[in-house]
Amino acid sequence: SDVCSSDLLNAIKKIQEKGVLIVFVTARSYASTRGTGLFKYITPNGIITNNGGLTFFNDEIIYKNVYPEDIVKKTSALYKECQNRICK
Image 1 (cartoon, rainbow, N blue to C red):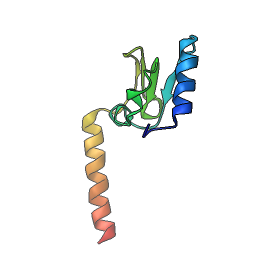
Image 2 (image 1 turned 135 degrees about the vertical axis):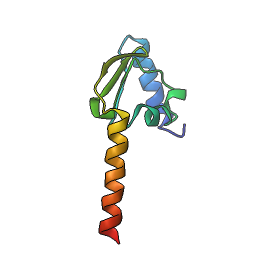
Image 3 (image 1 turned 180 degrees about the vertical axis):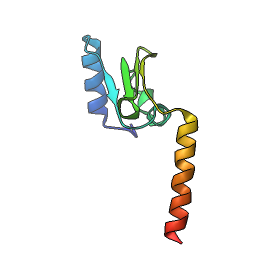
């Protein structure tokens, strides 16, 4: 695979078949995590993304504590404005 070794993928699949829950944990966003390609090979039981701010179990959101989109946009705009002032 382009994501990780076939030995690792086979090992993960074997332990999952034995009933071990597989959970992906990352600081990345959910969209970024889904875009890695790993999901072509493994279907995890759970996914924890956004530094723990968004948790899925069996494709259901069980925890959500992320910044509202408007706050993210305002913060990003302020950052860009400050960066433009400092970097000029």
